[in-house]
Image (cartoon, rainbow, N blue to C red; front, side, top):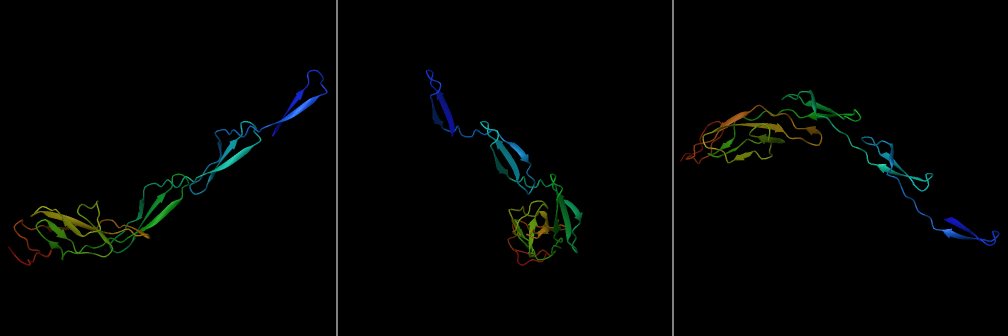
Length: 193
């Protein structure tokens, strides 16, 4: 609270005072006084434009890591797990993850029709018809009759491990459109039309 003093123009020995309501703080736009880190908060300091002796601070959220691309530091094989590493461009921290072993796809046991192929299932695997787009289902529908398709397996990612690279491809051919029976991938027929 401020004070306003009035002096009488007829007799200067007479004065009166009145309380002045505070103007309140009017804060500037703030200055970063401590830069935030990837995992640590920063500090923004604001100064009152009415009284520079008054300041306030606010926390600035951590920036989070800005991870680079994964780099293979050890190739996964069908016999051994691999390893990938990436580095934060801000703090240089590195993160390493184990890469699952590459599965060996079965070469027999697929269920084949004129326009679908159901691959033999492998526990913990995902399946792909192009080696890039992966699905949990081992079934591929909407295929063209009498056409060869190459399929790939990979071990799916878990909380502890990254997905494996794609397996070697295994190729199957859909049946003729007139054939409605299913055959195993070894080529033996389970019936004919």
